[in-house]
Length: 281
Image 1 (tube, rainbow, N blue to C red):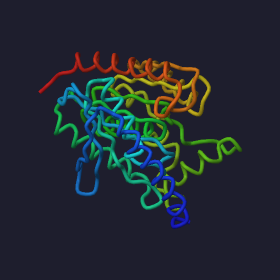
Image 2 (image 1 turned 60 degrees about the vertical axis):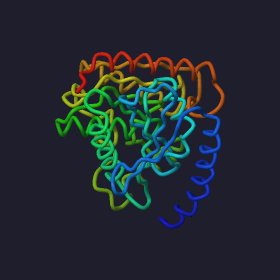
Image 3 (image 1 turned 180 degrees about the vertical axis):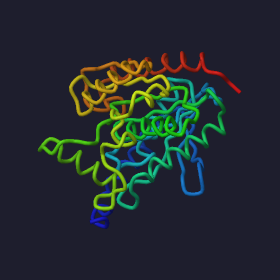
Image 4 (image 1 turned 120 degrees about the vertical axis):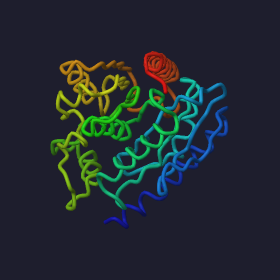
């Protein structure tokens, strides 16, 4: 099973990574590979004029088992240009070679690395789809550990409920969630708040940083986002949301130019507000 999935994934990841590299050649951003830990790397994008003392730690989507940081190379360049900050896409490990909590542990390691490199009040976290799940899982983990939070957490169509009911529309989602957790060898259930973020307790949510979420008004994660907003509001934790008449993670690929520009402008305004109020070392 694991070997078959790796064979299936290889051409998808290769093609998407090549597309990411090719599209990034038109970007004005400078890109470099960064070594986050002995076994973990990322791609750092810095657009002209970017403030290199401010960073966004980015976790890419792909159902928790597909795609790479290279797939998102052009997109993180656009985020850097829009926000005037450095963006680091983390090349975290994925099933079937690993299982939960490997990806989350690497997200935590990346956070500690970014925190040490850029300083207090300088780092936000963000992600799309399953990468949004990982970004939010990170803030839950930091809340559990009573550690310092990022200056903000941004979700682009974040996948926040993985404890899906069995139904035909949920088949692929359940497959991805089960693979992420480790199948028969899972060490926790999908209902764990580190997996299904909307199951986090109010006590944990009160520790969250300011939240911003953008999603389509009728797509895969619309209800997840609505549920997360309600949870934040009930816990008294700041959260902003914007829905668009667009598909899942529309900002990442081509098309939807007007909505994508609006989304990135709102992300920029949100981050500038958070960075302005954050303490610096």
